[in-house]
Image 1 (spheres, rainbow, N blue to C red):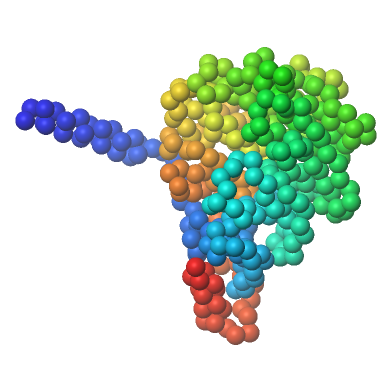
Image 2: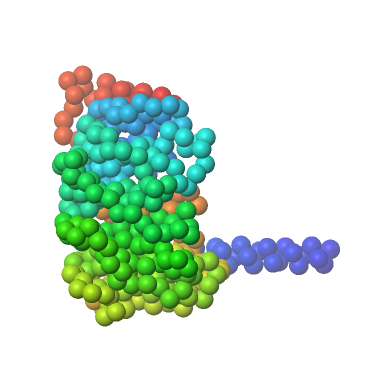
Length: 373
């Protein structure tokens, strides 16, 4: 009986601590809610005027102004990833037709390109980790099997080039890639001992030059661009004691980055996931407030000028953060929360005009499309 009472007291203490933590939280993030199931949404414009979403039947659809258009029809279970950039000129669509049947981190997905807010797709090829660069004038994607990064002009498919990685040690390594100007690409690669390096590729010469190499294979690197600066984070792997550092390097780089400025350090291994394209001199990432092997994670904002770190969430278990057309979203326990962005996607009414059939018929058509699972 005494043992039972002791267990009850401990349980009540744990519940009380959890309740008090939530009650004392100063930052309450609104959950992302929309007029359809959030799990189906693949891209929602910042102004709420259009949505790309998928259905379990395998279709990718576009919805805007009371109209629904089927962009791709595929087999049941097909999954889509829709990628935009701050330039808002082009959008990448990645299609995985074997999401539930072929479990591979290195699988090649079909890659399509479409104008921002458009519906006419152009097939690009197959690969992974697709990105937009240079005001959406270029795009890139990676092939795990050939270990090649391919770049292609979004205006002219005949204009393309590729970079071959040297990595021979890790078949699951995904290179970080940024294009700082029309001639210069920075990307990460692995050396013979598994240490990550940063290389600079010049299109005019077709050659790559090593500008940085990590001292140990127990760190990973992330890179991005902000305000004509290259941002690089080095984060310890697994339960190593390497910790985290973030530095900035002014562009162009002449030889190496030994003169880079450290803007953030932590003795703990953070989660990272740098987001650099929302504001000048501001980057966002997931910081670990716990230990390297016992994570307590939240989203923070780092000012590259003052080096001040600002807490943006108090959920303690954030696992992922993303930028969806200027709205910063965090994922926690399968739910999406708005970290930055004030638009009410559930109640917004940014539609221009009703179709000739009228309001009732338009809503009925959309409901039929959304519920036809």
